[in-house]
Length: 243
Image (cartoon, rainbow, N blue to C red; front, side, top):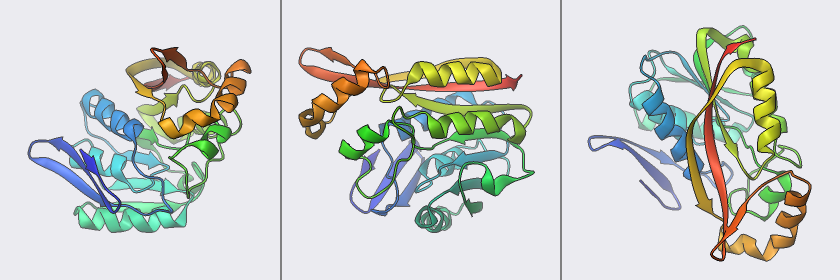
């Protein structure tokens, strides 16, 4: 895997990869994007109809499609028109058929159902987003504790899942993890963690430690301090069998 200012390449295996163009106005792939792709590729054993929510450049949905996990075209949406335009371009570049719609969460998908829904929507505290390198020219409206968008995606998932369908979602410790997981358990009978990864806080965020400390004190986020490093995490969950 490699990234530069203009393109990003994700290798599914030695002979299979996708390359996507990037845009400064569209959220760029991160380690969480890769963790989401890798864990879902391993988890899905039967291909199905996939929806990529908050698709951005399209790397997650395109990788799952290229990895043989989709039986039909890729379905994807984003609130950003720039993202919609970019994904269409990247799908064409990778010779993948797609249907991309513009809108918030499930707004573009009234009456549609999917075997797999992948929540790829921003899920960190807005205050963290403003001091991070990940949202320089893109917005993050996930609320002070980072839960609003993912909670909305969880709530609406049962209406858009086919019988036996599965909802995938990442939870970052730079949000209120407990609140998100509690909400997921209120909507689904089964909620399981399938992947966990720890990251080091970017150096340029350390000058804002007073903000992180205040958010942690309020239990809006969590992180650990070890050996002079600030560590945070991404966990990937699956939810199925709605209540």
